[in-house]
Structures are given as C-alpha cells and as structure tokens.
Image 1 (cartoon, rainbow, N blue to C red):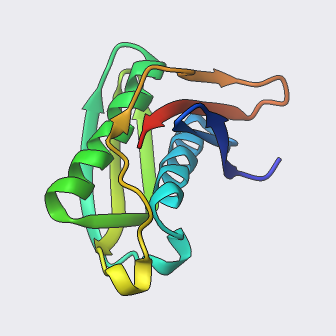
Image 2: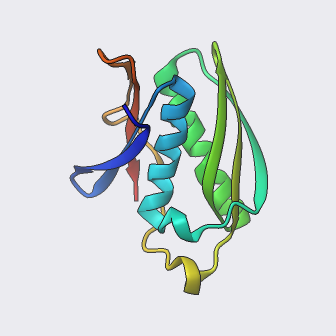
Length: 139
C-alpha cells in the first residue's frame, strides 16, 4: 500500500480522505487532500514551519480538530501548506505544517475551505493494516 490522498464527492461540499501506513500518515494525507481542494500542493513551497497541537478524546474528533486548526492557520496567516509531519500519542496530536503565503498568480486558489465537518467523519485501520482518515469539508 502506498500512502496517498484523494477526494470524494459529497453534494455541494468536498470530502477529503487520507490513507497511510500509520494513523499519523493518514492525517498528513488528509491535510494534503484539503490543500489540494484550494490549489495544487506541488505549487506550494514548504518554506515556513507552523506548529500545531490538538487534543481530543476520540480519533475522529482529533481529525476534525486537526483539519480545523489548519483552516485557522491558513485564514489567519493567508497561507497554504504542502508538507505535514504529524505525531499522535493517545489523545494528543502535535504537528508541523510547512507552507508559504498565498501567491494568487502562482497558486491560483480556486475555493476557500471554511472548515472540517463531522459529515462522513471516519478514522479506522483497514483490513490491509493501512489507516484511513476522512471527513467532509465545507467549501
């Protein structure tokens, strides 16, 4: 299994799904999928690190909190992210997201992600041992 991200259709909003060999890698891929809704992640330089910490008693809620923390950072600092390093320890997530300020010409942003929702929220280990982390984001 190769770690990857993908989108799935959900009415007017967009689903993000991350798949990885570990829970942390699936969270990283879900974040990359969220960036890809806005712009091509390959156009975003991982120039500036931003630290993020979240705590939730449930893995699914932790995913929503993680993605919403990224939405907050993108909105407050006018940034896009293209690289993520996540560590999950029980109920705690600590991460570094690397990105840069939005450049409308180079990044060509298409939509704004307003937040992660609890719709289709799922985090689980699959039969092949890989992890899946998904939810719908409001665009």
